[in-house]
Image (cartoon, rainbow, N blue to C red; front, side, top):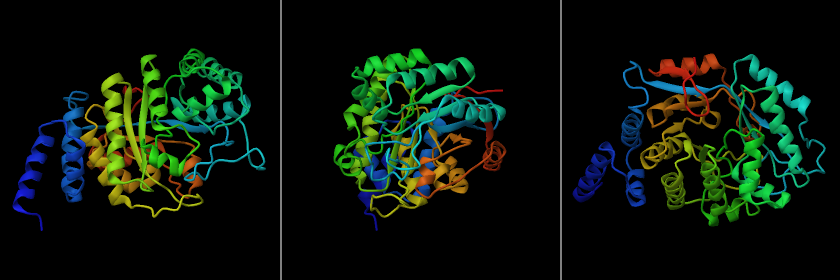
Length: 366
């Protein structure tokens, strides 16, 4: 049973959240232990405070989504993350690198359903030179000008700098000039090196991940940011991760959205007991409260399923993510949910919100 002093402290902290005050990591640790429905209600209120100016006076609150497609240009990777079931080596018979014709086929299908973006990511291929990437970007820009390339995570950019013998700034600048429109927040996992050294020791460290985002934002490229949790990290390390994202946003302001999801264990080498949907909702709600300077928060129905994705709209999320015609990485780890545009709109509508399609910059589309 909580003591009287504890109850007073929790009430005082809840009032600060309701007032829109910034909370500390110590505050967040205290909020984490609230009953789930109470934490969700605080996060929902915080969402309304953050989003109230965006769609004021429109009747029903808006929940956005995007029509895009995940495209993995290669599955060859030499960092061998323990939580990944997607990567292959060049010795594996099912390794691949997409050519322009294969890419066009995917983009034609996306265009046919009104898609506006691709999430372009791949493994850390040790032999692909810079011309492959620049030609790919230029090809998409010239043939599919209506498609934004949301591509290449911070670990990929660190890999590129090493392979190409260029600085991070030079690589990102050249990619932007060739047609890169924005950068996804993949590879963030947990931005604490103790954790990263256990689950992905060959991938870039926390400072290197953040440096890519700092440079990208300085160059005018927006990005998303992420957290993959529920494996070997502690609560304190999750909060340190959120602190580093909030600090980065204070400095550069380039993050458009935050997305978190739980570790999916099937077919991976990482031995960890998976956490359930309640823990996902708890961390999403806590993230919405803590990340007071990041305007949008996506529901992760891809890992949690449509029903939990819908419930997440009451736990701080204002966006339903992507139609996602194609997804290969999470599905390789045993989780595979698919939703058409109409199904997403139905889920948003039955939850009491107005569904609206958006682009990467959260501008509403007709």
